[in-house]
Length: 364
Image (cartoon, one colour):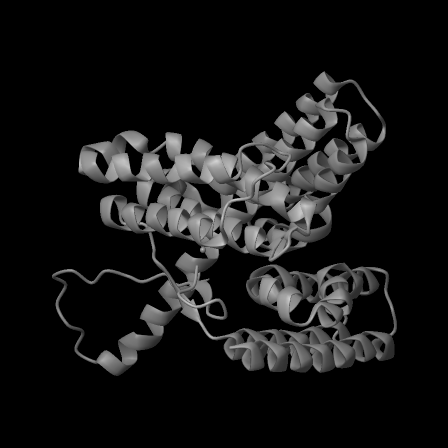
């Protein structure tokens, strides 16, 4: 990833199987290594999911472009640059700076092809080059493990959890409220299905019955999100959530995908506040790139977990907080704003986070 109650949230927990290994002589000393391995595994899965989101955004963009919706196509072509690039460029840059630059240039070229009103086949070719760049990035950072069914299943599970979050944001009590988020959910479902095709045979070999259940769950998701434009009759959020969770559970049981577990909204807000503090310190130290990456993490890996609840329970708070965390803070960091300006934005974000948490907890 969703949550058994509307206010519980999911975060990735990368658990390690100890199997029949002997107990370490000093358990207390082994614990940090275990925790470090968990964190590294989770980071690698999140990296793969971020790359999958890029491909999903491009899928939606191309479909909209071919349908004549240049505005919608431009929006989705721009999302990987505005929302995802910073979160993956730093990790990739540690392994291969030239490849990190190549990915950034490929994303920029795809967005430029859309805004430049190029022929559809040129847009498709630009997105194909970006897809190839994400494949090279995955291999460079994750290595051979990226080809394992367990890793791919973990990415699929995390991507489908994002689908649930996007659908929660998109659909309100009175119907569709956010078209772009519905389209994200559609595109990420398509990409998850594409990824599943690579491991379907291994799932089938492990359990034909569970493979059939996964197929049925994907069909439910595709029925709920059948095209880039929403159906007249929207599916229930619970149906989308149940289907996504079923796929994740069966992948866990058949190929050892990492599970998705619950987290309290207060924990999410606490993590964001901690990241905001790190942003201020990092920016003051002169490392704007690292500060921008932390800003992306605060939004993509944390605020998005509670955004649907905030939209529902405190829309006026989200109206200011979402752009602040989602793009404005990062944009000012990259523009070289003064330390005072950055800290002022962080202070405002803290106030809004407090208001958001209060609304969510009262609603619960």
